[in-house]
Image 1 (spheres, rainbow, N blue to C red):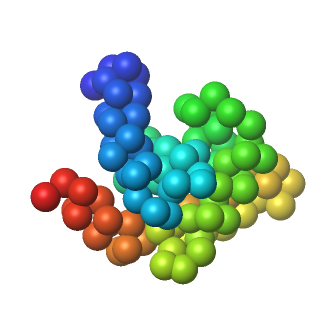
Image 2 (image 1 turned 90 degrees about the horizontal axis):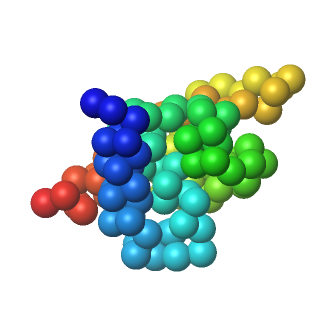
Length: 101
């Protein structure tokens, strides 16, 4: 799969997620979750690079995704670089399945 096809996939999924109440005020969080659900980015630096945005903005959106019901869970944080490694939760998978019925 080419990078263009991958980008189209996560962008389509993010577009489907954005109308959800959870993402109305944070569409960047929908993009991060879409990347994680498609296994295109499981850390904050990779997400920032793929979304062509600042790492600090990604970290802020991760806070939104960690709030209950948590859609991502942080596995570890690199204290030196502030990179956060994460995985999707069962709630995120359920939301994904709900959208793709």
